[in-house]
Length: 337
Image (tube, rainbow, N blue to C red; front, side):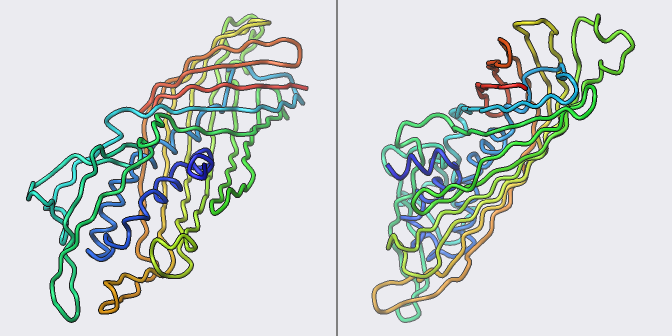
């Protein structure tokens, strides 16, 4: 149950928590090897999270009247493609890891996939008494082991129109704790309707807007008390910063409207493995590793969105679909005043 609670908060947190059961042996192979594997393992999850937290920023190209205030509850699901579930592990890229059957490479699970059957590697480490020693390690699997094929995200969003054609937007997910996991999100955006500047904007058949939005997410997962690896203050910390640029077009009907957008997403993620890790081989060998590594990844890409918005009085319901590196579907409940 804990795994699903954490998943609903942040995918990167659960991705790395799944890998902790093998981190002792991976660190024994050396920090470089552990970092290299973890980088490839979480890369698709980082990418999916960047795309996921940028959905739902708009549901129309038409700006509301001046001084309008609206509140929205937005749910989103990003779908995981098959090519994001695996990566190719080449032993030539590692210093102290090889496959048991001496294969040069194999396709293994990312944080979004699942190894079935299990895949094992041989880790070589330096024992100060006995010299080079070998140990068998089962590679971590991902959330695919639980038959999960999407990345869920949710936001509370508000907007205010201080001027004609201008909307100031903000989204928020309060700091929430689920056992040892914590996650929070906030974002700000500016949407400007360009057609509101035209002299005959009321008879123009469509509305055209531009949107700029920034989103920040940070999460952490404390696994010190799980007893998987000896040590202190062990946690994973993730920080995501993204920028979205979008061109939006929509109809201007009274009840139901259709909208679409073409945008560009740019994001940076930082995942830190923090704390003290006591890599040991019984009573003969013990080594403390402090704050083993930090992984930084850049994500960028183009996206296209199409959707519809049904408005009845001060309430509206919108749904859209976004085509990108991670396709996604969004649903929004909106209240305007």
